[in-house]
Amino acid sequence: MNELKVLGTEKIGNFEFTGIEGGFGKNKKSILVKDIALIHGKEVKEVNRLINNNIRRFKNGIDLLDLKQVISNHLFLDYGFTKAQWGNSNNIYLLSERGYAKLLKILEDDKAWEIYDELVDNYFNMRYVIQKQDSYMITDPVQRAKRWIEEQEEHQVKLAMAKQETKDVQDNTPISSKDYQVLSRKIGQKLDRYLSQHQIYNKNQVALLRWDLNNAILKAAGVPARTLIKQKHFTAIAEALVNWEPSESTLEKMKAY
Image (cartoon, rainbow, N blue to C red; front, side, top):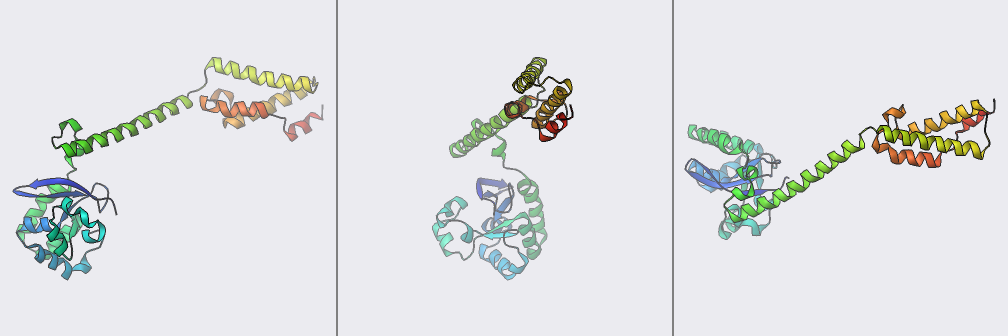
């Protein structure tokens, strides 16, 4: 179940009720039976009776939730209930848009469907406005504080994404001509040291070793040619240069010369 979030007082026509989001999916709005009863001019116990008599038609977690089963008892004030209302009720039902539509089929009156159209257009299908407002535009101090905290979190997420994007761009930037020259020089120096240490002068053997070292560099970078080496490959290339030793197959081929 997605976390429930009380949005505050919503107004549709002449009716005011508690706006709630979550429970049936991220950003999905829901409505309390006590508010449905108010809007449709019925008693809460009558609407609850209709639901309980047809409970097999409602899927728990998809069409409805019983708040007395899913939230702490001390939160009743957040949802617009008095302590007595909460304590005396066997069920505190919360309906999704789908659950509300099912309830209307049970109510079966033209007025109910007219109200349903208005609720769908002006409540269920509308995102909470405060989510799109800057904190300084919100007059309610509690909601303003909540929005300010959300803005700081959003800023941190955006900042982290921007840093990652910058790093990705830098990592995937091809090496400059200067870096290419430095890399070529380092590879040449590594090969020269090996040739000197092992006193190798045969040009065919030198060619085999040069190919082997170059192949080790390309393998470390995961590219088919030096011109495709990028900034992000330097660490792997440096490690490959330090640890390079001719492969067994190259050493075997060298014996032919």
